[in-house]
Length: 186
Image (cartoon, rainbow, N blue to C red; front, side, top):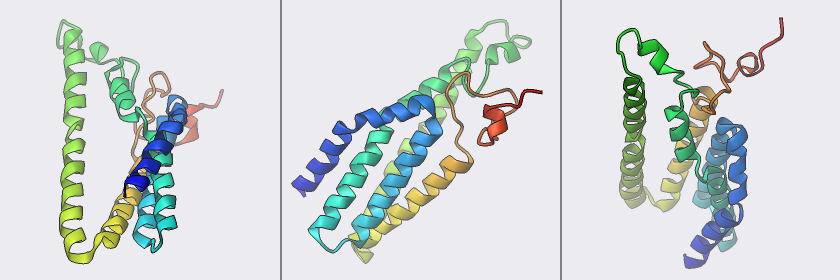
């Protein structure tokens, strides 16, 4: 087990530069990371030899390489005035005289999204504790593979490319369509 964990850790450390993809496109980095982690879980669940475990470890390491720093980067994007929430101070200046309110709202939103950390920890515990105990760890790994596929779907259909100054107004949820990122010159 120690050798396999060493492969995961060393692969992610050696390939941390893959996280540079997230500088250009946050969604692409999340998509690649979730896809590779999901594939790694499927390989782990279906492996019957030690070489299969090593292949899964390499896939986990590459996926983690894409995820390096992505969560904090997206969080900072939401705090930015040019991020996906837009300039809240302009929207709120009619109701409130201070720009501080916009910063508070951004921080509240970021804090509310932290619930996903808790959901992830609870889901991991339930899958490993219940599914792993009653049906075996191979089935638990495949369940994580299914959760990874769901996460990949979420990234494709719902995740914003949160990089500031990328989105046009009115393209909050449909920025997957090219005309929002690259509008036609009319």
